[in-house]
Figure: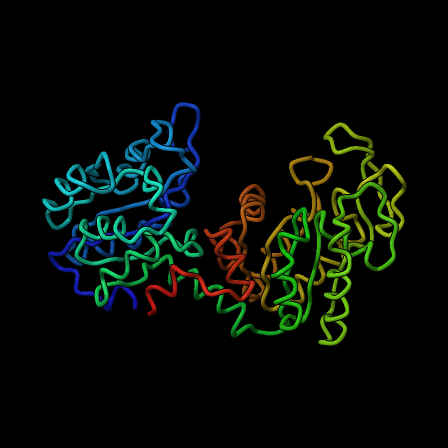
Length: 394
């Protein structure tokens, strides 16, 4: 169910947003991306004659905390919306209801941090019922928390059996993932990077059958290279994952999936910006040295794979791109994603480090879609049903 299916005129719409944004030392919003991505839903509701009650978590508070109060978000939110925002000192009880029950059409309220109450993460039904008193209609626009069965994302929908819907951001996120998972234009390439195989193992196992090409970079590549009999020196490997990595490689052969591992690597004699660096064959890394980025040959091969694919998912960097000497692989992929998009490919970037890389590279506006959901995107790609989505569709 989408916004257009709702009767909202003259009604209070309770919206779960993801305003879990970074704050600087003065508690001002450092990156307003997630707030900006929620604006289309808020504007659509206001234009439809509703009043809007926003609720979100911020950080991982242990009890109440001034540093994690959502009142710190209000100045940024007001500036982006161009109108005042009423702030409730709590998300439930009289302090919330005194504001939300008196909202006029066109007005906006923001509730205090949901996670100041442990009942939020516990998925407590009574707490969800208290939240529900703040609205007549419920909208979930927080894809970043859709994988959590929390009170505000899943349980609260029980109190809005007919009056619940996805926001525009949630719809866009799910459509982007379905374009990759359900109806991709071939060839389909999945680029999976990051430090550990264990954190991406379920994705690799789920996707290896359905993609045409599977490109593996970052620290996790060396567990696969070890599984193929290579020598990886002091590179990051997970010994307990070697057999499962080998099984993924065998599964790829059985399903005619091309697996791309880095032929060469930028290696360092320590994990430091000031280490000594050299280019070496990824299967012949010297003792005491570690692979920290894909090498020039791998960059060329990976770039070619991106440019010749029609649907591309990117999750995870190719190396330690925070080190200038180990950033080329990640930024080569970022630029190739931009070029592929210009040539008609559908390109989806998701996961914190990948999003950071595409932003630093300056190409965030040059790919088809940048996802706001880290954990939610990963679980969707693993083939799991997300509670926040299931609750609306039920």
